[in-house]
Length: 273
Image (tube, rainbow, N blue to C red; front, top):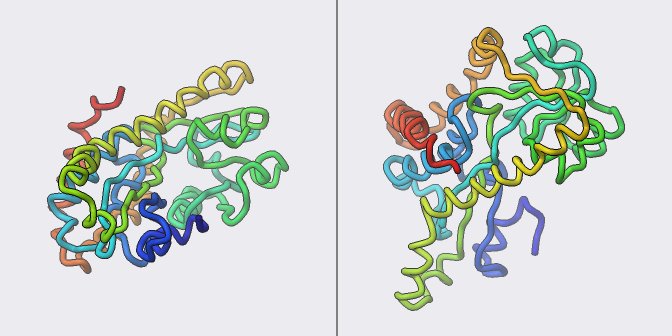
């Protein structure tokens, strides 16, 4: 009913009752839940989604970032890997000279810190199929949904994933308040942690449907080595630093919230099916 960047306004104006939006598009309002997008921090998308919901309830809700809507929950995508057209990414020097498609400004800064040139503002399929870029940061599901299996030749996977995209799911507050108590109770039952598990597991399931395409198309897969991960983790430290500054500005105990999120994400790893 509106461009993806206008979903908040569609709901608050009453044009739509419920919407979801990548939290990146709510950046002027919503900053705290983006802790879930920090690379290499959560073992899988379900763990990240459950952890960010529990952290929201414990630390973020009092900052009232979702004032004006009724927050139903969060979920993340299944997690990003690096897909390239030709050469594999096995060491830090392999990033040099590459142009990499990315979806968000934070990921653009990440890729730049790795030594490659980020490309924003164009369709991923067009960039990859036309050879405009050398690779893309995306989930396995992009092999299906963006038809990249014909072009991707190498895939590098990272423990804790190369970041996630967090979705916010929210409802018009007046519409929620107007419902009968028993109807609100049903919505409440299937919100929060329930929808965090459901939405994130859905993305993971979609990603896993791409596994046969990897084999059918002869795409080589690689796991980032401990040596490479040690370098990459240092180069994404700005993600945490920026988030900590935002959290402190919102009056949140940033270190306590960060520690709680990390601990909860690790403890929730086994919730993924």
